[in-house]
Image (cartoon, rainbow over all chains, first blue to last red; front, side):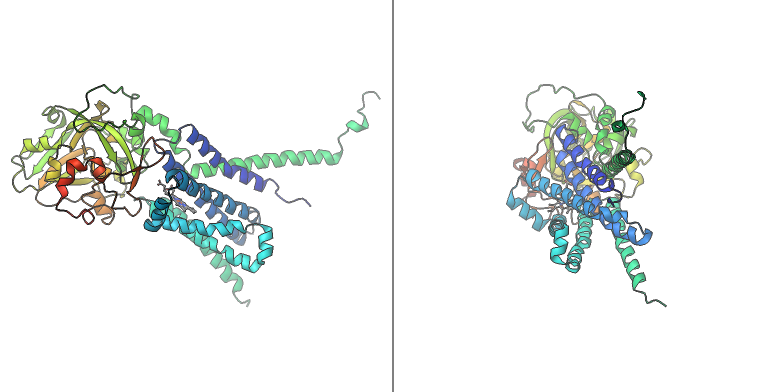
Length: 199
Length: 327
Ligand code: HEM
């Protein structure tokens, strides 16, 4: 039998990359306003975080509604999140900081919000690296799964990075934190249910 | 018989089903892409900057022609930021926290009639109509660098008069050591004031000697025109050697006093925003390195200068002060 919902993943990937294309177009035509680099940085960071949170919602959706389709796009969502995070970090290092290594190091060391974002990104790298079926086979499912629990840490740090960056109005980061907390909470509830001894 | 299609032209049942399947899948794929793309675009604020064009219209006329005039003693010769950028990229939380919000929302503010209360340690407390007050002194053009604590900067041609002239005229008493400023509190016209984001009204302050410095300006215009509302109309402070948040907008109160005034951002986060807030590349803010800045309109970064490049003029004001502690 052919794969069910063959349109789902390609549709999602095409759609999720559209904002990247649109952003590039806006940047090229000067439509990003007075400080295009800051706008593009924020936009890419936010997209990375949204996609990361979305990838973490897949499992709870399966657990609570029995839907299987979210699991078909989980890996794609994670890789898309990484793509945006990488674009975010590249824009920061190459254009914003002009690849001036000493300035970047000083930023990572001295500014807590950059430190946190940096750690989040460093954690995402091995996850993207081991996202293939071959990597799962190589590592063995147990170890692969344990490694991929780092997503929880990376996404929490991503949310913290967002929280620390905001000057005064923390409502948006709060939404992200609540969604993440929800996705973790639902997993714990599901786990507690399944391990409850049958009476 | 001639009308019957050749057998090779009859679409086999299976092919027909496959084609239908293909069309259905294409439609679903496109729909998924549209929903995903549109959703992400909206969530990440993609639409925000599409509003720039109507913001421009609300800000009024296009770019005014900069009248040629001789360069003044305090003018920088750096190229002024474009009118569009300077009037659509503003931190003015009374009208929203996004930098595009003030240009969108500030048109609701009614700036006439406008009075300024001058009070405290002065010979005669008084409430002056702004149109009267601006006749007291000739207006001067001043092209100043403007440095925001968020590590971006602009060059703005202001129109105004030195704060010191006003203070001389109202005659501070010998007890006056500081000047406190207050922004209008009018939540009906300043939507941001309906949210508890900051402790309203916005307040700021200077030491009296800082306020008397000839660089300190009370501005009523930019680019040779009256201040647009989003830039602080009808009266705002400009102290170019300090971070932008010291440059309080829509001023209704000026009070001379013996004690150091409370200042809004210091009240909000004392560790991050000091009373002095002098531009200082050697003292970092927890979120922004102050060593460099991005000049709006440029891509790379520039080194930030001590006192925003006004060290020759103002550094002597602080010779007895540890600038790392008194940030
Ligand atoms: C080396 C790693 C990183 C660096 C140096 C970095 C740097 C930055 C900078 C400089 C900004 C602020 C831009 C501005 O206001 O001008 C920012 C904002 C942001 N970043 Fe990062 N970042 C990193 C990693 C990440 C990662 C991994 C994520 C997400 C998972 C992320 C998500 C965000 C978000 C959500 C924002 C705020 C967007 C907004 O305010 O709308 N960042 N980052």
